[in-house]
Image 1 (cartoon, rainbow, N blue to C red):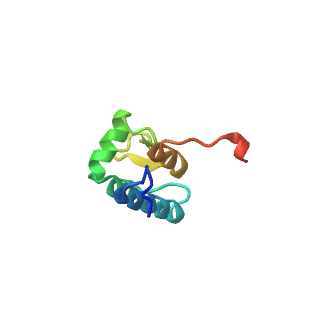
Image 2 (image 1 turned 90 degrees about the vertical axis):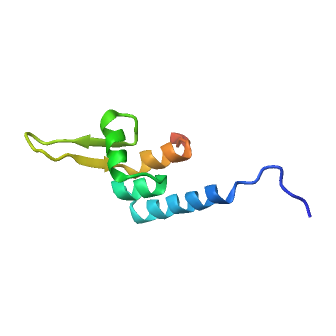
Length: 92
């Protein structure tokens, strides 16, 4: 029996499976609490990262004089950010 030189660790494979499940369930945008859960963080901390611009796949907005903000994490940018990959236009 040969052992492969490079083997993807089980926790990484499990996280990738969770990511794929999120993409299947939420093809357009993924709710902040779901992304926070995948990343092992508090949703409020993720919202703070979005607000200060350190979490690039997400954005926030406020309409007029509203007190509350809206938050969005688009699925494709999040998937590409999480996997550190890109999609070439030649694929389509």
